[in-house]
Image (tube, rainbow, N blue to C red; front, side, top):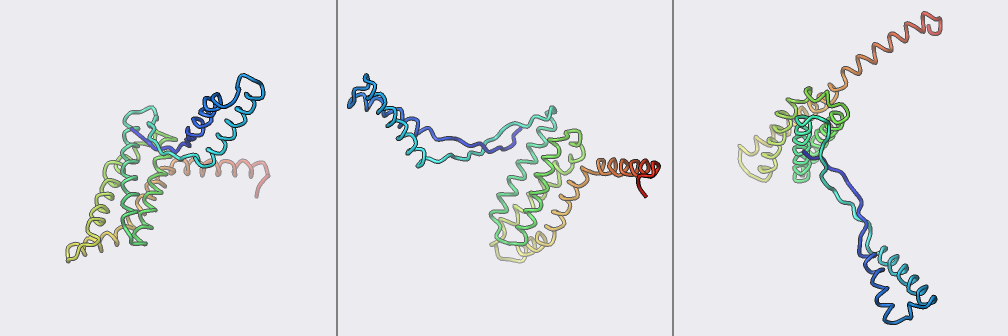
Length: 207
């Protein structure tokens, strides 16, 4: 049950090189004296700083567990994330610009769905069919397209045409699924606005 996060890792080589200065300096300088100790400290700092310039901070992508409080929801989010990662990988393997644009829409909507479910796990049942069927089926269809994109023949050509014609519909369905997650909030806000307008009008504070 995983999701991804990016962390920055500082390189350890500059620290090792700075530490190495001390035993080397002990062989060449009287580190037991104040000036020898000061020179060694300055050299160690300088080596560490210089080495740090040649060893930049690395950005590492690692997995961390989902923690919504429900194992079923965590498993659902893990499955969605894995399929979205597969979708992103397929997108990189497909050169068609228009189809790639539709895959971008699918992935963007899917990531937003994951974020919303993490924020409000009670909405998880609303995306159950999306997680179990719609998204995996989309990945399956696009994987078939990726395999056949250089294959000659009527059958392969038909698959490519049908996928191109359907991709926009799939992307729109993903976006509609995301939008549906906010239907209750939209209704509540509309009701609150109507109530507020009624109060304001009743107090002669609005027309």
